[in-house]
Amino acid sequence: MDYKVLMILLPTLVLLAKCEIKTKPDRTAEKKLVGVSTKSTTKKPKQNAIKRPPKVKPPASPAQNQAGGSILSQVVQRGKFQQVGDTITVKAGQTLDLRCKGTSVRWNYPHYLHEDDEGRLRVKHFGRYSQLIVLNTTAADTGEFSCGGYQCTGDGCHDGEERTGKTFVFVTDPQELFVPTEDYYVVVQMRTRQPALLPCQVTNPLAKVTLHREFPPEQIPVDGVKISFDQKKGFVIYQPQLSLAGSLYCIAEFDNLRQMSTKYMLIYVHYPSAPPKPTIEASVKSFRAGENFAVTCTVLGDLDIGVDFTWAYPGQKIGRPPHVRESTSQTRRGGQLLQESQSVLSIEESRTGDGGTYTCTAQNLQGSTSVSTNVSVLSAAASARARNQG
Image 1 (cartoon, one colour):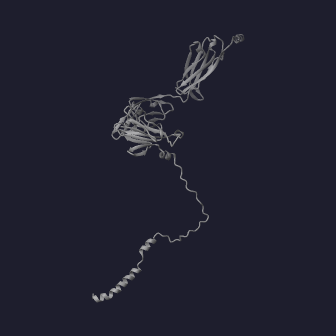
Image 2 (cartoon, rainbow, N blue to C red):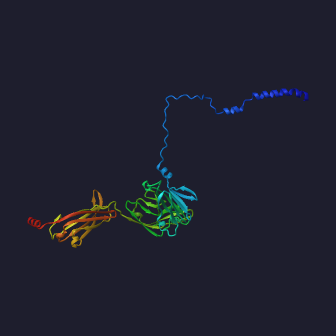
């Protein structure tokens, strides 16, 4: 293009460019207006406005209170603490370090540690907390640890309520699935209507545990109703039966390890539901010297429940030996078959010293009960009148 023509058109091009810039929308202003409501900002007064009560935070549940206010914690690292839960797990050989908040703190721990002769157990008390340490833990240390203490702010520390905390500690050992014991056989008494415990306690909460009979060899079913398994205790037999008597044991399995527990010799015992309720009756209310009479003590109760009788009588003071005859039989009362136990104290060729109070005491596994009756001696005049009337 010719240079002179370009110089003539240049002012026109510059003017057109300025006009185009002025006609473009302002994007910056658009962006500033985004999100701004077009409604009027004038507030209108509310008519018939109802003031709502402030929201009240619901009270925390007992479980939340317990968790939030636990006084027992575990030292997991140097300077790092965490509140303990229902159970905690420690590997054998590690140190168990527990802290309990409060003053006048008392600790409870497995009985095994009460007999510690190696100095592994250490308890230290400080101003506002107490520390329990078990060094070089072993599978035998598995059990419940608990503490209790008062939260003191000044005088009268023992006036408030004592707070407690507890946890069950599993000390896992790759070679020990059951808590060790020195007993090869443990006798367990199964009582009628009372739960029985087979204390095959595991050291690892992940272990699978089953119950077995030694002879005939068989696995005993665990339904959770008649028999259940508790990791902290062992097998609980809620409904003892004679068929469970004998030698039983537990088997625990974890990874590639399978172990058998101590053997438990279960003995079934018919256990009474209550202490005996004896009745007493004398064959005569009064006697003449030289006559014979007897006092009978009777107990009605469950079948196969043993009852022991003892007597206290006036003749003991004069050296009269007891002549007692005991018997047991079955009787039906109100359509129910019961056991009748009797003890009969016989007095032959009575003397004046045989008059007085006769007491019978009946005892079973639940307790004892005593009953008494009085037998009097007829005077000489009364004896003469009785002979004349006869």
